[in-house]
Image (cartoon, rainbow, N blue to C red; front, side, top):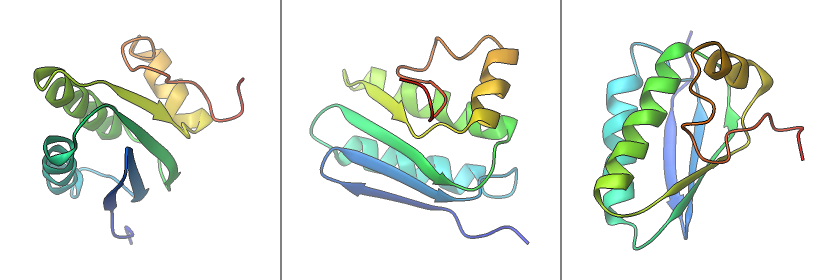
Length: 106
């Protein structure tokens, strides 16, 4: 019942769509890390088309951030759902992910 997860790089935007769950997180992580490594600079990670919020998503985003840090790049997260933000806040992770704010906030 999970929809396919897609990670696409267009310019400096890394867009994640579909659902990330325990069954898809490893392949999604690898896809994203390969795209981060192929990029030439800092990236904005657009989560607006992500269909779910799960604790494995936070792990995924932290892994991507670590990958970018190792390359001397930064990630800015946008399109964060209220639910995903709440999960991050419960774990005290929201300030570790740059730009990590609920989609409706200014």
